[in-house]
Image (cartoon, rainbow over the protein chains, first blue to last red):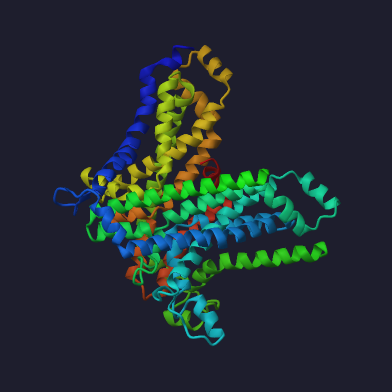
Length: 293
Length: 276
């Protein structure tokens, strides 16, 4: 037996294809990203080394900071608007006896659709003349709003479409956690006279803290990654109002041919994502300690 | 509050949310069956008066949905199968073969890939694809899709490979199986449920992928469903019923599949996020 699982040739055969693909599409691009990030390159001529020049221009690039701000709005919206709703809906589904499966299947459904199709679909929901929202407004005698073409409304419109797509996915995660809580705990609390609301707040919520913390982290990661829905619905417009970091980076590189600058932006995005993860870890660890006291 | 009241209140709130979820879908199906823009504008939410099924024939022809559909289907499936097989072989070697130091090192290196958010490497991959001469070929999607799925797939499958009982392996060796036989006859069948989960996760990811598909492919005949449909919308922006029909045709198969396999699909899609 020793010799069967110790054959280096077989080991290499099993490991090498994976590692080769991984090296080609992950490790090599990481190395070239770091290199291009410090160059001025239009993709045609040979790259010219400019030191920290790209990063210096990024800090002065007002439009880039608008996109950073929009990503932060995505994060805040998902953490403070979506997550409370997600937990509420998961709690409600866990408490009803009938139609549980129907609710679960239905709310999860949008997360199997492709983001670009959802972008098309919601683009029509916001359509100035045939869309749902303007019809509702018309019902109350309010003038139609050009949702996706108005700088005041465009970002909110995308946030809602994005929430429509992803909330169900997280609801199912939280629901699974709630349903895995032993029934006896709930029954004991009920016998002790705790009301449904009290049981939900005092008992279920603390018990699902770990999964809530996971979905907070997933939402932050998701909000940092968001790009498809922006490209499909507005392309970053009007006037940069919905531009996110990733769409700005892609546009800079591919539309304007500023590959060096675009890559520098991608390094900044990576740095910001790492910083946010670290910050969240620190905040969360401190919170946990507070609970222990 | 009496139980019955609180329960019906729960149902009322949930139904409201269900309506919010279903509304866009119902709207698009109704609109796809309407004759003209004027019908939609006049009664956006009414039932279609005359069912305009000819929209479907027209959209199918004009949007080349069959082409996009085929491209999406075969790219998603081949890339997902490749990733699962490669990741399973690698996980097997890492978890079961006796090269502990090399395995630990490889495993850590591959997991680093999960720390990097997908879009960050986009420009470098774009340049790489050009250098490899793969721009505007299906290789430019097949290879990144396969490679992109590897870190999470290895993470998930390796956990299962690790937990395989040693006795099975020993019995296999006694019966004269080599390393390949052990992998193919024992490890793969025993981890099949987890392989299916990972396959679904990869498949859905590939099926819905937009960014690479949009920038690595420009020939219409090579486009996948997500980018093809956006192109279709932009080309026929003013013909609402036709665009709606295209949307319905492109989501219908997924919804049918979901209706039959919802449990497996939900499990598959949520599996990655809690462990990852």
